[in-house]
Structures are given as structure tokens and as C-alpha cells.
Image (cartoon, rainbow, N blue to C red; front, top):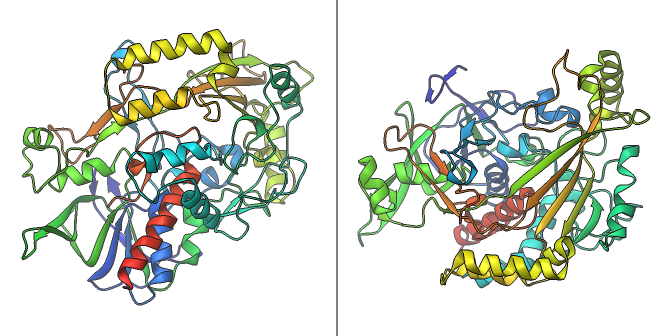
Length: 523
């Protein structure tokens, strides 16, 4: 299979199998077509194939399969896929709030999507944040429903251990494996007493609706061999023989027809090479928060002025498409470890050590290549800034939104006052993660180990947008998060950003969506 971005030259139709090996093609039409074989796409398609065994389910993924690639599978090689063929390699437009700089937006261009590329963090936000989704006008999308859906997706194997108390609020039989790493580097030890001395309590039950405190974060890792657990190697093998995957195939648009009552109905999709695929029941868009809007807009679904500027005929007026883009904002500082500590960076400069650690990983033994990060802290602004600092920050927030009555901005102001909602995340990250990368050979910093403190704002007031590029509608979208300014099944349906790495929420969204679609189809 050969791809010249963004045009698909050749494709292969695969039946879902544990090995990911080519199998028989499936004749059209399909009952369900899922556009995007990523985190949510493979989860929802697998559940549809199980719940509707007589329906033919097709997943279309723009990227390659990537199954079994060590860069994806081995935790110690996290980040090596960034900028590769497995990455969409998206960028923002120049950001006025950061002196015109352009920021990279890493997203998975591979079966499994960003669950194949992320850095393994597996956590949840506070219960009030999921309830906020329902309060913003989404009945049934709340903490109780999302907790049940997230539990259904997971198999958490670190319950009732020294790092996690009890088993309430976690799943034990879902496809995605999660754990707290068996390897905790020695230099992580001071984190807990340091945070405790600042009044931050230790949290040994962070997945059950309260993430505040200092904790060892769960990771999406399979416990037997310590490889990545993600949608492509965990959901996909469970799919039925009625489930098919088309890789290296980019969808240009969803095809719509007018029904007898004047409504629009999706009949299938058109690929970039002109191939038309037909769906008898539904087309489900699962391209992710940065790519789903462009698919909809190229289909004639979206805001009038955006479609007019691009020359696309508007078929459905849906002004919310591509709007309300939110992202966590972070800063990071790397520090040199003292010489008596062995850090993660040693894998980069000591080839003998790296080879030995890789051998241990392949043998299923404890290895630095099985490590994926551990120490996290979540706090509210009062914990981070003190009482006076919290008051000052709240005043600045009110000044920033002015007289706006927008419900999302009002909800963020409400959360600023809610002591149960985290506002700041501190990661005690292993290794040098500065923006310039690990020092090159010959640099004074080469051959040393580091740790990095990362601070991320959970609920920034800035909201941006992502739309098609009028000069190249089928190319990369124009992404404008507005950093530092003021049926779709994927992360883009979240009305407001949560204080967590969103992997668990996306799996939960997929599980809930599948249940709703199956219920509708079987009435």
C-alpha cells in the first residue's frame, strides 16, 4: 500500500482479526460506515459488530494498520511516533497570544488513532465535570452514565494494591488494559512528601470521581508483557466476522440525499480517489476533534460563511461545526538529576544499557522500556495560589469574559469557585522533555539524566475553532485554538474540556454511542 498525502493511491480491505492480516473483501453495501479507525472509531465499530451480528460494519482509516510496530507497542519508545507517518503532522495557524508562533498538533494517522500515539496517561476528571456536560444541555451525559461506560471499556489490574485502594469505580473485564506501573524510579519518591508538605493529600482512588491530590497515574498498558493497550489491539480482536477495516483510505465527504419530507439522509461516503461506499443505515463520523469538522464541512454541513468562502454548497446549516475548540495549555522545565539516580534518558545515550533493557522487556521482565511515567498532582487554584491568589485569579477571569453569558464561559467561572474541580495539573515527568529535544552528542548536556516538571491549565478560558482551508478544502484543516486569548462519535462532542487526559472519556463516549445506536437499530 502506497500513500501520497493527501491522495490515496492504493488501499486494502481487511477483515478484523487479531493478527491484522489481510482477509476476504466484503461486497457493498454496508449497514454502518465509521469514518475514522481511531480511539473511538474502533471501539464503537467493534461494539456495533457484537450487538448487531447481522449488520455489516465498515471502518475507514486514513492511515496504515501499524499493528505490532515496536514504536507503538513499547512504552519506553513513547513519543518516537511523533512526526512520523503515523502522525497527521498538523499545525495551528500563527497564534497571536504566543507571539505568532505555530504549534504542532500531534494526532494519530494510524489504526487506533491517537490511542496508538499518546503517552499512556489513563485517568478521569472530577464527577462534577461530567455532570457539567448534562447541565450544558446534553441529557443523559453525566458522571453516572460516563462512569458506567468507562468501566465497561477497561480492565484495571492495579486495584487493591499499595498504589490504589479498593476496586470501586474501576472496570475489571473491559478490552482496554490499565495499571499503575510496577517500575517507579527512585527519583519519583520525593514527590509525595513534597506535595503533602504543601497541603496536597495523597490520592489512592483517583478513578472514582475525585482526582484531586498527588498520585501515581494509571497507564494504558497490558500487564502480562507490558505493551501498549489501545483500541487497535484491544477492541479490534473482539469484533465479529461482520466487521471490516479499510486502511490507507481518506474520506473526502459524506454523501447526502433528500428524503420525501425534505430532510437530509447520509447514504455513504466518497473517498479521495472517487470511490463511493454505500451505507444502508448510518454513517458515523469519528475523525477526532481536529479532523471531523473538515469532513462535515466538505459534505456541505456547517456554518454558512465558512462553506461560502470555500465554494461548498451548504446542505445542512449547522453553525456549531468546528467551533468551541478547547485545549490544555502547559509549560515545562527540565532539571538535571543528581548522579546517583538512573533516569529514563539513559536509554538515549547508553547503547549497552538500552540493549539490556530492551532484552528484559522482550523477556517480559521489569525494564525501563516498560515504564511510562508515574507521578501526577491535580489541584484547585486555592491549593496552588493560596486564598488571595485565588481571589485575584477569579477577578481576572471575570474581567476576561466581560459581560458574556455564553454557557461554557459561565460554567468555567462556576468551576473556578468549585473546590472539587481541578484547575492545575503538575506532572513529575521522567527524562528531558524540553521543546528542543534531548541535547545532541557534543553538547554539554549530553550523557546526563533529567526530570521535567510540567504544569498544565485544565480549564483555560480561550476557545478557538477548526475549519477547512478555503484554498485546499481536502488538505489539512486550519486549526486555531486561540491559545492565551480569550452524529459524531469522538472527542469533539465534549462541550467543555475536563481536567484529565481524555483517553478514558473517549472510550466512554464510544461505549455510550454504541449502546444508543444498537438500541435504535433493534427497535
